Length: 219
Length: 242
Ligand SMILES: Nc1ncnc2c1ncn2[C@@H]1O[C@H](COP(=O)(O)OP(=O)(O)OP(=O)(O)O)[C@@H](O)[C@H]1O
Ligand SMILES: [Mg+2]
Image (cartoon, rainbow over all chains, first blue to last red):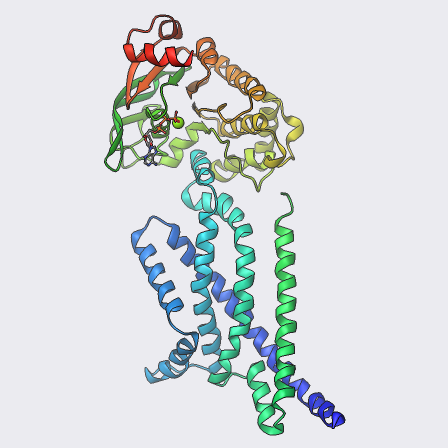
């Protein structure tokens, strides 16, 4: 009995690891897209330009106000309908990244808003342009505010990435389900899948804590 | 020649008119002290001089250049008008040396080595050379304010604007900061100082402006304003604070 289970697990493990690798890659690229989009959205939200502000707000409201699953369906099944072919893992990265960008945008915005207005005034009074003041004075300080919530966002993203298993991406969740369809060992395999997700979020939490500590040097 | 010229300056925040027509000329090397009750518009007046507040109407010239015309490069103007704030506003993520060299290097393109040399000279001037590698949070209020003055001076401005530079300090720190300002005045810096330090106004000020309700009510040398004020509102204000 137990020997059987161990054998199943041993045979399943390489496939699960492959899936975990895919999950990590998806999350990594989605995080990159999320940071890029979120930074632009955050800056637009605090700018004085009404158009940028409005567009950023609309973007954020759309992505936060609709389910991630539907966003993934729109990209993977919707785009081909419009004549745009898209590979499943591209749709997955794009969907996760665009979605995460909205949340990161709000984090960046509140990080910037947390900086005392006197900082911007001091920088401008020295002759810095608005972009210079942002780059050299505001953003370096905002980063400290932003890292903890950003870390939480990316851990959530890693977990949410299991949704992409429904658009045929061979991530950890999908690999687990494939193995179960052959072995019928639902409890065992899902436990292993959960354990692997846990290991990944655990490591990510440590990395975030480490980044936080590094940023607080000099205080 | 006047370094600062203000003509019929008006400033409103929404419906609230805070400055209601200010006319003033400040000459090269003059030290002008601005006094007046809370809410009279002193800070707003000062902040209009480097356009930290947008000017609603009227004209302001710094060094013959109208700063509220459309063509003007405000970042250029601000390099010439150093400002010192009540709450210092040092950059907490930069050490003292970096606080002072940041703007010269990034804005003016001064060589980092050269900027550091200027910074050390200024640190000598404010008596804080040994704090070059400290961070702002490691300094006392008085030290922070002296660094803030050095930071503004590093841009080699033509004018220095001070908005209650000693109001946030413990009493025993005030003297050090006023000493630095006095030395600056003696070197011939053109200064506009909003302050409640009447001793400083008397000793260092060339002229005192008394503001109330968005207007300059009375202007004169310190002896006149403090010794023999002409306006009733000036008399009332001084009676309250002296
Ligand atoms: N950003 C702003 N928005 C709206 N009202 C403002 C703003 N800044 C200043 N005010 C108002 O303008 C008036 C003048 O303010 P100001 O700060 O210039 O006064 P002050 O003479 O410097 O006073 P204090 O001695 O208290 O510093 C006050 O009624 C103030 O509430
Ligand atoms: Mg004030």
